[in-house]
Length: 108
Image 1: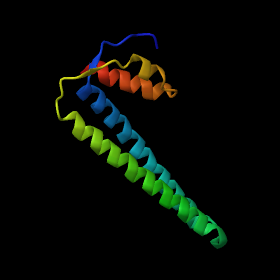
Image 2: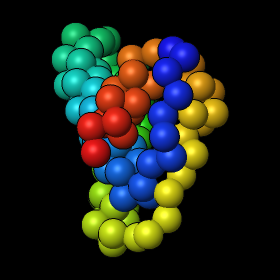
Image 3: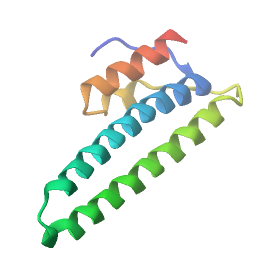
Image 4: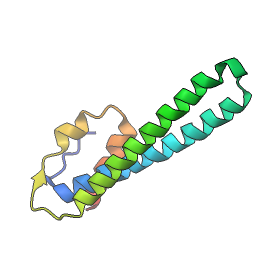
């Protein structure tokens, strides 16, 4: 996407990142449910491996949630700073993520 954004406030950028991480946390929850369903049908000799993956997904979800809360709380500090975000947005390889972040930043 070639539309250049004006420098954005730190608050706006942190809110956009926090929102995007919330989406990732929900996806982790869906993955956790899917692995739980797999655990129900996997042969007993492979259940330990699936349980370990469930634990990894749970830790990932907790990690994302912690970062989401952290950035959300930082965004509430109403700092005076602004960020140049165009190069950073251009480096994001997932187009949907970049588009949502761009829309969130422009909306503020």
